[in-house]
Length: 331
View (cartoon, rainbow, N blue to C red):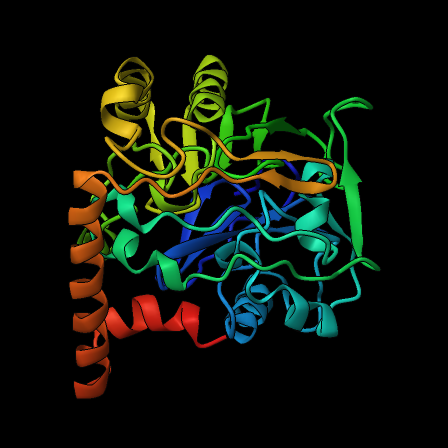
């Protein structure tokens, strides 16, 4: 059997998951990367996972496309640490361009850090330990290429797809949309797990949820982005965190997320709830101060307890908790 691009379907190991014809994903601890076959000879990589995961990504590529067969390009939905962690290592092996939105360039060329994570948003261990997550930039100035919606929304090397600016979680966040089959790769504009909870991530129960709260800096922009994606009427959604979803369940839950965004996606308290951070083409220009209300104070106590628990568990043995959080701090 052949796909629409003229390539044959192939059997892949269970550790990789199929999104749609010619599109595969892999979960790296708690974040997903995707590979898209363009034709019989070409493919692209979407996002670059966590630090120290380059070997796993290269192995997946060899399984799907053959040994020593680099992608035509790497496309970044955004530059947060869990989507670019293996990028610099991959670029030592693959001499390929990296495409990102123009507003992500400051964080990919060493010019600006992202707004700091907000561990007071609540929701679980991932939030409470997010103060440890790196927000400093990387520098791939010699490889990065600009995606600019002021020119057009097509992606070089990926015919049939276009990028959709979906800011809010990151200033230059984009999602990718395949017009013909209504396949959507969302990045973190919305996800399909409760990404604040380590337990929810471990269980991988599918539920359409807002962007990860602890790194989202502008909630009004985030809601607008989710509304924009809903209007595309995706039939399949592959997200940065969680398993792919499709069909009526995706449609209904995405509509519910839009309708209940303020109640279910926006945290009840947090650094960016009342005022967003401000960023432009030069990077972050303003970050609101920390709020020390009663809820924030209670969250701070929980954060301390969570950090102590994490450190205790790491000393005892290599648990899922260590893999989940330790992988992102041992950079």
